[in-house]
Image (cartoon, rainbow, N blue to C red; front, top):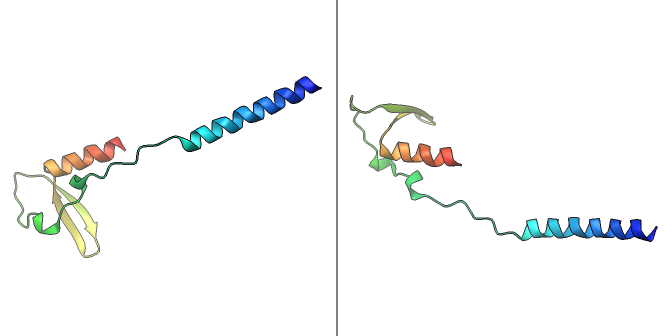
Length: 81
């Protein structure tokens, strides 16, 4: 009986130590990437036929976002999440 109780206490202690070690582990915070935010004034108000656009629905209606380098970088970042 003492052996079974000792095993139970050992198992409980092992589980407790494992839970505490998981809670204490340092997890990296997601990096803030300023490339994900762009001011509205920086967007082009003219449409060019040489650039593909992505339609986005906003409160005021649809907006066309050019699929430029910024758009591709944002897609890559979101794909990694």
